[in-house]
Image (cartoon, rainbow, N blue to C red):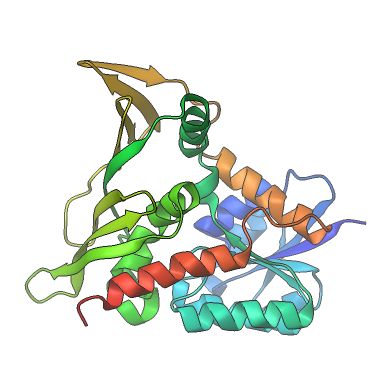
Length: 306
């Protein structure tokens, strides 16, 4: 019997969930819920449009929550209350308190709560982990820069959970998966004149004394900065850049490109498939408690100066 899926949010990550779920055998996308003006998009997909979320819940087994951060808690709880499995995009919520509430409700209802930690499935990251396991080198320190979040609501901490949760969650999740739970060394938010915080800088110390520095900013009032991660190791320097995703190795003045096994989209395809596997009884690759830990670190960074 097909797993019947409803999409809460059909643009942005919602469109990615649609395109990855529609090709999975044994899955039927019943329809999508969103703002009324997005009805035409649902029609383009060839799925039913639901102006009412509760109506959609009556006709599905599971939902994906691809809505703005501040709506994750509400719609996740509404779905779980109706005994539906839930895939919610990262960050799972805007606070640790909300995240705990979501996990508690999922356990009470004995339903899957899958947080889309697609960052941990990105081809460059999987390739780097493979190289590290094979070559057994020591990571010394890491520097990461990036910019993102170009929508006006991204400037409102009450809607996003703050700049660290909005922007830094991605890499913090990856490096926690790779290195463990960190200790905060330093965290600071910077604001432009007459603006909310636009830049977040932090330094984290991971087990083994590995220091990771992240310097990320919003694109609403500042220039776009292409992602660049410099992973300094006892063997040489591994550098990740995009677009397009590119992993290289720098040693003795030479930079060598490392072929990536698949396009970035593979991360979303794997994550969507993992959600369906969990619904059918497979253990989660990344339990929601791990997503909660990432949320906890981001929340601590946000409150560091307060």
